[in-house]
Length: 573
Image (tube, rainbow, N blue to C red; front, side):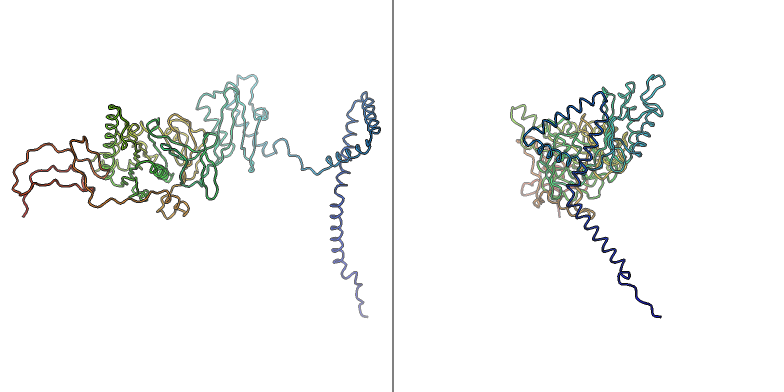
């Protein structure tokens, strides 16, 4: 017997059921959209009725009569007013619509379970430091209430503390640096490592405010800063520490960033700078940034003890007097710098005694930049020659009135090899790279106001100008443009700031000193000053004409020996 086919409604019933379900869902959504105002008003009326019922229930029985009389009087007044019932209905509908609107769920007032556990752990960790056995009412006890000592707290997206106010007892020694350091170290460890925390101690109110500092911008490239002559931008810092801002260009955006400005010149209290850091921390970048800013209004002499060609882009540029990488050239340049400083002091002193303004050649700033000068100390000792650092006595001691500024950059491991003159006269200090709080305090003379971290980008550190506060510092990106690892944007930014090249004329010679015009002016850092010849009685020479003085060519000799005086010439075949 042949099997009869199933009815059509049963064979494709599942498809029809799915289609019907979709149509019903669409119709329900459409009806919900159309009837949404009515649904909202109905929900609002229900909430208003529940609120009224709750109000009546909460009212004491002896006051319910007065409440009923008040409501009846209001209804009677509304009914007697013209258009009163209509206005009352409109008002009721508006109140119901407002009450029945969709509202987001209210956020929890207190911390969640994980945040509570973190605050409890932090409270228990502070108990040994903020409690004593003699306290009759201790604020910190094991198993105590943490909400009494943490009145304000905030967490970031990762569940770590981002802001915290800590109350501590009045007998805590908050005036001692060691006691403060212990509490700061504990809070930084318990709140989450890898971030920089700022601690604000309120000794009068016995409160400690802990806040997480945002990262400093690292995308600021070298550029022309809006500064006056005598101002040098070392880097950028937090907006809470500096009131001044500079307009900067970051790619295609312009923004205002607070800078760390170092002022030099006659009225500067910190005329010289010392920068220390670990290898690769950005000390050479800082010196390049300072050199590019100094070339706008002055001359620069660079001594590179590293010998890696970090300043090759400045060789032969207008305003760059010398870029020395060897011991002989470094000694010659620094000897000339010391002589030039002395000459400027003498010229300015003579002008002051005569009642005239200083000469123009003493007003132009002279910058002496030394990168790793301790590398020459060992070479000079091995060759039994003079240490180049000993030639910095004159520029360091008397550089400020002569408009001579000295900037020394070296590694932290070689800080002990720097001379006492460098340590005593460099009142502006910078430390870059990862460093402990003890290292920062030993270099800057004051502890940092934040907790140093282990991993920092190049050019990141701290700065202190004289006796001022300690600032977080981020040096603008000023890499070597000839380095293959430099990005194209940063390379072009540095190349745009370089002055044009200046090629001296061939055969330039040093002019003979004229005794009628006073002391001769030095011709540059490449040669030593030629001593004035003593009067010598010349002997008879069998020549037809009077011998002319031999000119001295501007070239660095193999050994720095004094130029021989004009004596009796020898016969040549």
